[in-house]
Image 1 (cartoon, protein in one colour):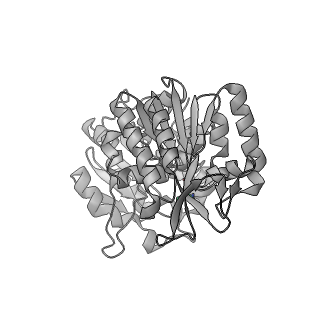
Image 2 (cartoon, protein in one colour; image 1 turned 120 degrees about the horizontal axis):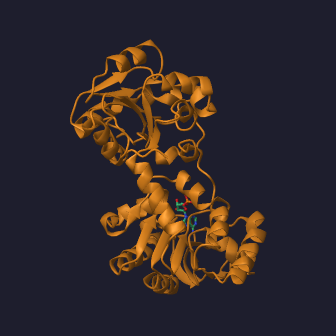
Image 3 (cartoon, helix red, strand yellow; image 1 turned 180 degrees about the horizontal axis):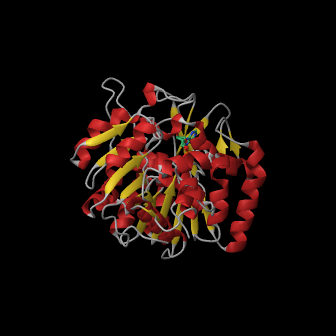
Length: 397
Ligand code: AMP
């Protein structure tokens, strides 16, 4: 695979697929969290320093019926201009005459942002003819959008075929893949995966795949209660997927055979309603009374999970331990975050896998104290499920 470090960008126009799907402030309409833009800066600056010009391709939200001002990437221009430190040209369309003219006149050291690729349904359809039109704008293709690497869309996957000798990963994408591989292929043992969140069905494939890789799997959050139900426990009104009970039993059986230890939360913080004002108490996770529900891991579970984490050399975390958005049920997730931080201080490698676990780590202020926080939710999950990511595959020769 061609690498961005080896490629000569001098006088080349680099089409860079980025993920600028950033949140906007409701009142000001300005970018409220610029993390995704900052994450693409190393790649952008590398091309500019190498004497190339940059043409940025991105999606933004989920427009349904073609061009729609509320999904226009023009809203991010001030933020992008400020971060790249130079003028940003903008094309009101990602293909067509204006895009062609602007890209043709672009000089080395200049930056052009194209309008939202999802204004064309051909983008998500993975349409080859649309990808070909996009490809005409640049001399080489760099994919730095890890967050969409699991999608076979025109600008993430099909486009690469038009650059047989000039397609490569950007630095962000490279970093994400190297980190995920570090855990999945070369993780120092003991390896512990913490899997939480609401639903078993979302995480079952990951847990299955991890059984041949890790030593311990800590299961927390809402998904733990389907496991307890499978074991014959009383789980009251806790979230449960009855149709997944067999899968939970199969996982526990397979774990026994492969020698992987599965840790379920022995106790829970239960509540009489799904609310921050609910009555709360601590209770064994398999003895939850009717009309009560488990919304966080309990005190004994926290201690047990902490011990496992402090004895781990590699940690992978996806999904919160409870309803961490509500303060009274955030303590379990916080205690796990603290243990991950401490273990990292002691030399463990910790990878926080996107979405809610990343949000939790940030909420508790531990961003700088873990080894790596992934930018890709769905993409990372599919990687952990053992699936091939089309966006990465397309960059291979
Ligand atoms: P996921 O996107 O699958 O990682 O799930 C994250 C969501 O799971 C968060 O919004 C949490 O509030 C929710 N969650 C975690 N624990 C529980 C629980 N015990 N009951 C209901 N929802 C939960």
